[in-house]
Amino acid sequence: MGARNHVAATGDAMIGAWTVGEQTTEELLAGLPIPAPVIGAHPGVYSPSVDSALLCRAVLGELDRRRLDGRAETTVLELCAGSGIASICAALVGATVTAVDDTAEALAAIDGNATANGVAVTGLLTDVRALPASVTADVVIANPPYIPAPPTASAGHAWDAGDDGRDVLDAIIDALPARVRPGGGVLLVQSDVCGVDQTVHRLDLVGFSAAIVDEVPLAFGPVMASRAEWLEQHGFIAPGQRTERLVVTRAVRDAEV
Ligand SMILES: C[S@@+](CC[C@H](N)C(=O)[O-])C[C@H]1O[C@@H](n2cnc3c(N)ncnc32)[C@H](O)[C@@H]1O
Image (tube, rainbow, N blue to C red; front, top):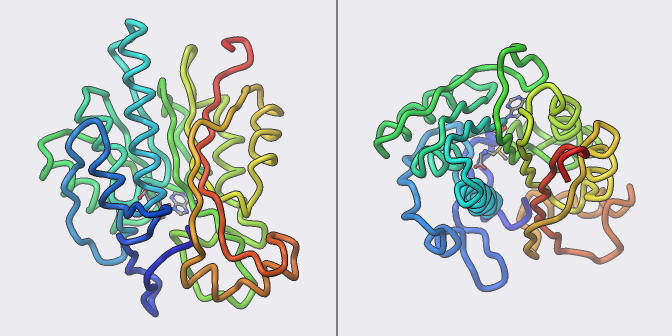
């Protein structure tokens, strides 16, 4: 979540112009196997960025694999859905999709963006820690907040994730056994700054085998740059480090490896 071009004082205006190497978010989205969904501007909602584009790419690949395996009917659950762009990608290729976020602004955006793209996505307003028991899916995906936040950080609900960057990610991983249907899979996007090994280990603890399936290097943007010294002092990055890797981890239940 590094190369943000700007962050509004209220923390709600999020970018679409990060770069991955030479690639912008728009270029990544243009490289998807389907036309990228049209996403409107929704104040207070995370605008599709590089990490969003990685999740779109990952879920489209996963759904294509399932289709080739003869599993055409797929349900997708997106946690921390924001604008709903990854959910809409999944719906555009035929999945039945539920998109969860804990802000009313995101739910309104998901609804509006799904309609604008001619698909149905069921929105669910809840914290990922309070999902109803009935919410399960074949494929669970998430690009959650994952930036370690100093105690003095002003609220960045879409990206700040506690003092280790893992508050939401770990809550999602812990919920997976009850959410992923037999034969299903998981796709998680995060920065390596908050620990990819920790993600793989925690997935293992809850009975899932995981592997990194996509990653891109990214220069720090303003949020990461503004707290780089704090990140150095707390061991999240090496002295002088000003880049991160965005990583997509795919997981399946151990018994299904
Ligand atoms: C980094 S944004 C990602 C949005 C979208 N998935 C994307 O890739 O563009 C994270 C989203 O998680 C939501 N969120 C943060 N904490 C949450 C929680 N505990 N439960 C549900 N949603 C949460 C935020 O409102 C925000 O929309």
